[in-house]
Image (tube, rainbow, N blue to C red; front, side, top):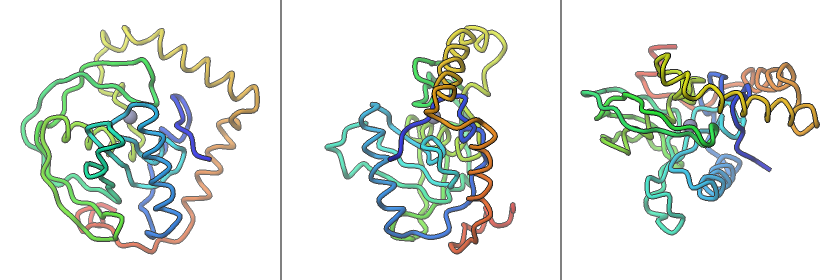
Length: 206
Ligand code: ZN
């Protein structure tokens, strides 16, 4: 059973590896992730938020489970263009209760594979663009709090400390393994062979 993990679970800081094949397992995982996202009233969810170090995320900017036609899956995504920037309020399902203004590109162009294994390209702006950038950051182990200046960070300090305390308690009670064990599990997944090609722009960076 998958569950959304909260800060400071090490999977949230783990740069994910490309998805290697699109199969029944991945489709089942995606369905579970949509259920978790809707239950948490979120608009996006990245694989490492359910402790899976793979480069894919899901989103539905309506946050409505009935709006199935708004569901999108981005596999091995690559943001290929960014245009101008805008600041807006942001939160994260792995940082419950924390919100802050974050500056991001207003308009982007992104390439990714869908669940059929087809490469697609889309342009996004405003909330759609923000969610894609937020989720793509997750795949690199990046969180929105990383963008905050000293003042905004200070304002969230107590809440971050609370999350840290809760997570350490969950580890102490055996709900989660210790950090070192989690990282070893993630490292083991990283050594599995790669089968699915990644978009050219991403391959060139590797
Ligand atoms: Zn998030």
